[in-house]
Image (cartoon, rainbow, N blue to C red; front, top):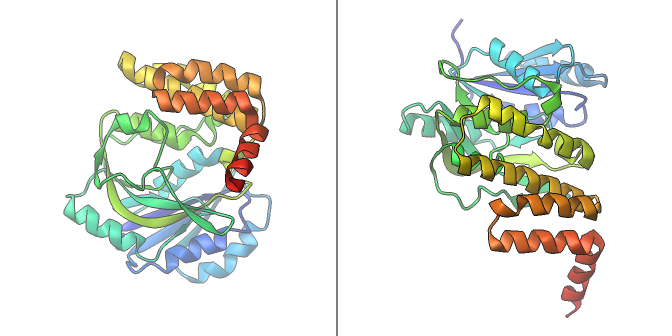
Length: 303
């Protein structure tokens, strides 16, 4: 059997309401040399029933497994993939029809990089919002880009035969941040090529994993320092930047939950890694609180 050029791995858990649109966005690709591996990570909803009619397209494989979180689901899909490049697509996101064609052209032009990604937009309440990647030029990026979070999310492709590829962390302790950890480990010894083209729509709905309870998220982030001390070889400055960003994330989520005391504690710890402008805005938000910020916005609109 001839292997496809692309393998698309879609991990899914209880996304019956979204997964059809996600899969169909792959079926509509202008470049059609691909396979789709839907890894059902122990769903308890109607995912199996929803997917069944789509299996008429032989490019789709349905791979149900016991629930073990997305890191394990992505690794499972990667182990079953046959394509030269493996792409990861969350089961509530979508691709523009030219996504694979754009990637294929860039892979050819860049002589088959180990990691490659396109840009994305966030869809929130029917509106499209540019991501933090919007103004970044096409180029190769290494570890430094990912010390301040994971701006590509899981919207990247990997060359399957890369001997240095480090797989996704499968420990549930790090659920929803395993893609960031994946990039940190792999970018320590490699680079990702960013294509200057927006070809992905990420669905920013209320049940997204990154919108989990703020205490759950902060607890996960705060377990990262021991992990990166064990798995990464950072300079003092790199460690400070990474640690500062973790505290920044904790502060922002505590602020959003109106937990001002906690937000201020995290903000104070984040300050050494922030610019003066970032520090001022963060501390001001934490001091004023969500209600105060919203009130100031209303006053500004009236004036």
